[in-house]
Amino acid sequence: MTIKVMLVDDSAVVRQVLGQQLSSAGDIQIIDVAHDPIMAQEKLQHRWPDVIVLDVEMPKMDGITFLKHIMATRPTPIVICSSLTQKGADISMQALAAGAVDVIAKPMAGVKGFLEENRKMLIDAVRAASVARVNRLRQPEAPAARPATADKGALPTIREKLAADVILAAPTGHEVFRTTERIVAIGTSTGGTQALEFVLTQLPKTSPGIAIVQHMPEQFTAAFARRLDGICQIEVKEASNGDRIMPGRALIAPGGRHLAIQRSGAFYHVEVIDGPPVSRHRPSVDVLFRSAAKSAGRNALGIIMTGMGDDGAKGLKEMREAGAHTIAQDEKSCVVFGMPKEAIKLEAAAEVMPLAQIAQSIYRYG
Image (tube, rainbow, N blue to C red; front, top):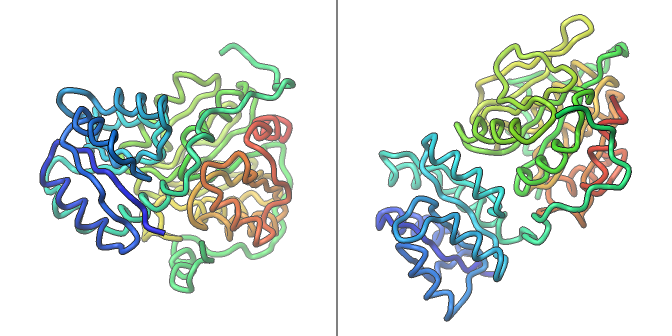
């Protein structure tokens, strides 16, 4: 099936290079381009794309206003193409909260070379968006019995498996002694920003400590963490090397670096690691989950949520084999049922549940 795409960007260079790179995929067709949202709205009256790739900083009408109009009138998968700046990151968080399914970061200089070098990432983002069920981006109703609140595709290749082994050795199967300190590891991708917001905003400060991998570009994870920290009762921060995983805190892997869990006595902290992509991603959910299996074993809860591809499936299986309890988000509540589906196929998930029940499961686990 051909994926029909509209490009909306005020840069002629970006429109040209994006169009060339996406069209080279074979299954992607650029049906329209527009230099601002006003022109895009005019063209949308004649034909509608499967996916819109949208800049958020444009003249005449900003991308956020245009995005909100699209989501209110005819919800369509939208991939944000934003500048790799603090302002671009903050605006992109607004776009994701308003219903965008993914974000691509472009540098202020050398854009042409960057887009050419990252052809596969661009194509993967559009393909993931094309199968996203944007109606699922609307947060479900929270379950009636909420925790008591306080104040405030294919399996990894051999080459990818070896890359994971370079970063972190596989669990040995040795017993990990149970401690009173419980931790939670969460992995997600497309649709994950909205899913994480729904889950984390329900958690009280007494919830167990959480380590998170959300596929997102560098610098954008810091803006995402700041946004969540402002609306959650728990503390949410972009992880720094050595940060302790502790009750009432969620640590989000920095974009472009892996996140691993380490044990120090009865407590846990994170390591932020450079290294090659694993399961085609950096940060990789597989790296996080494998480290949880190795360092925490039965003291950990692993949760894999909405996302394209298979990152995390094998790592979640290692967690389950190490004695951890494991959960996969169900198909009905996923924006993209890729990562959870692969985990379920591997029998890595002990439970499959809707998004609305995940916060309760985290709270009960602690």
